[in-house]
Image 1: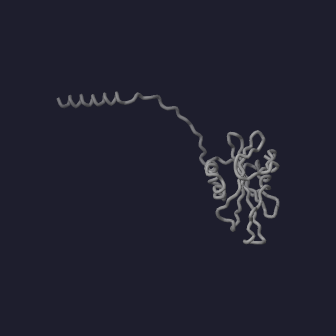
Image 2: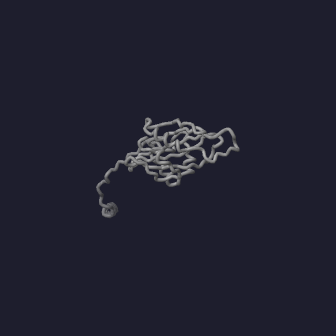
Image 3: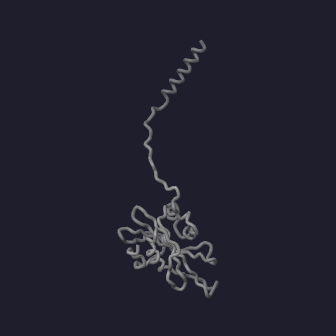
Length: 187
């Protein structure tokens, strides 16, 4: 008698649980998202002046750039006293080297304090970051001084532009480049 009552109770519990369970829906469609294993971002570039960029950009733009995949990074050394700039680091097979050189000519040391040294004027490293975006190509251009007596936080002007339909358009930053400096034919 006890076995029949126990079996009836178990059958009742199983029946109630089956009725309470939602009807099984078809399995969800599997979505594939392509994610690079080791994306090239400004966070993993060797000897890159992150602090200068972080100090000089708006937090929103900096955050966006820090997670975006970088297409090319070019560094141009601008010597003191108006010497000819030269490329010291280039990626993307030289595709953006002429653009980087033309942009570097618009940079120079401003507000240099001669109290530290009357015979030494600083040289600059002008960085050009290239990103491929949906609208075309975005370029971020800024300068940095890596010399020892300029170590620490630095603020610099930044030029942010987009190349769309063969024309560069400034979309952000505080640096104003003359039109002749960023000729689209140099790209």
